[in-house]
Length: 288
Image 1 (cartoon, rainbow, N blue to C red):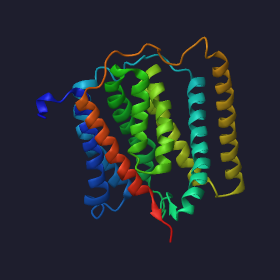
Image 2 (cartoon, helix red, strand yellow):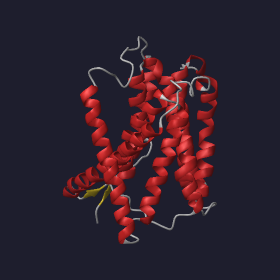
Image 3 (cartoon, one colour):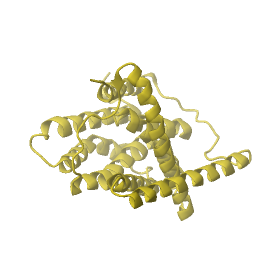
């Protein structure tokens, strides 16, 4: 297989693999003894690792990535999608407790074992701003844009699935994968800019709540209240949609006539298997 025969889609998948590899080498190996601040190390790593994706993004998707169906997104819709993301996060947390109980039967756990240290400003910057921007550029702006010629349903679902895989953490991956569907839908119906804003808002809220949770009773009550409002909002909107689903569609129903080539399927499958293996290896450990 020569480089000249690589299709744009296969090239995008290869760039994603290089992105993951570079980030892991830099963040977890090369820079770990050079840069003491975890946040700075992550920022440097994610920016350098973005280079391969940035090259293919510029070559193949830059003219289309902000032009899905650009239109103004009402503030009410932003609040609804934000509430849905909170509900996904809460549901995933409950689901993780159930899964952990099952894993313990086999003397296994998928909970992180790393010690939690005080979060630095650079870490907040990475988690709340730089990380979400880079992730949206990669998984919605580049991957989803490239895949939409095979059908927007496939593009949204596959980009969300792979977005979950690359977190290399079972519980984070489930939440990220489901959240990726929301980000993909927003990027398609409105624009990538809105999915970036929503991603930043979601990560920032999650970071703030994890910081203040447990500090005092008032803080805990505030977090619980916001989550309950989010759950109720999601349920109301979901019921309303189910009542009207026969007369309206969230996404275009026309299917694409294009299909991935055998080479593209091989590259995509290989990449997913590799990340799945890394996810399992990184997530599970024996209980002492």
